[in-house]
Length: 414
Image 1 (cartoon, rainbow, N blue to C red):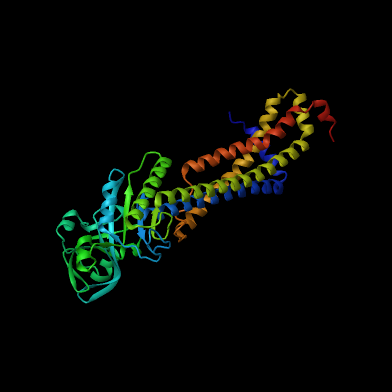
Image 2: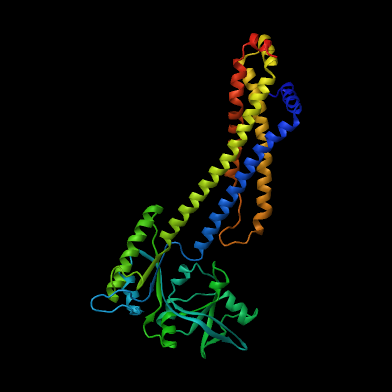
């Protein structure tokens, strides 16, 4: 039930010492404000990390070849390892039950691409159809490389959006011919990539066509596989690690490379890396919560001290109330209500200020690793409950002391 006299009494008590009330409220508001800002940036870091992994499939295993650094089976170090179509096919067949999407790559860096009077240097890659899902590429016009292009050695190309903008200047590129080092290819599709312009500055060709057109024989630069995901993340990571290790051993065996030569064959597992990064992000979030809660506790301690002072100042008044028949619970309720009010009002002010600042500043932050810092609704509700609990906690000890005051002792207080 709303008690107008009780609220008038609370406001009268607070107004008697405006500076003390203001400083107490400021300590609580600043604590909530800092907590909201920290949680907002924690979410921003999580969004940034996720966006980095969205550039390619999360459950991706990449295999690259390098140079041997160790002697093995009579072969000297310093050998350049060259991956072949046969290596890719062997891995693809042996681990077919674990693989979801796959592609090998024949790459020309900075290849010259022409359309009419326009030209530019872009990465040219011979690929397989599965690369669309490995790259998380979204086809905006036309289609992607398909199995018919592979089987029939078609001279077709799928170009990135940046290439289309540079060469075609708004003209529809579909079914137009571009030339790569004088060889004509028909554009059958345009793609967007979450990685932005860097990944959209590519020209994709059917792998066998690229190898044949540019004298690549059966050589490939690297190969990539996405693995089927288990429902449990930890189980998925464990399975991914096992398959990655098995693939690495298989390639080293085929290429006659020492098992411990980490430079000759490099296998990168993004799921394993994702687990490490997400664990780090969770740790950062926990630290932010710890710091934020610590600032709130500092404010709550200040509220508790002020309520103790208020109880001390009103000792005689409390004694008179008890002498006139006031029950201990009514005394406790009076002190708690005042404490919760100060904490809630100040805390909500800090909460609104923090949310407003995130809404204002968040869109202006341009960073690959901090994107859209914000506090979601559930976290805001949790913060409100923290405020209520903090206010009750701050007022409990003073309220308990007030309820224990004996009227005869209180009336003697000076």
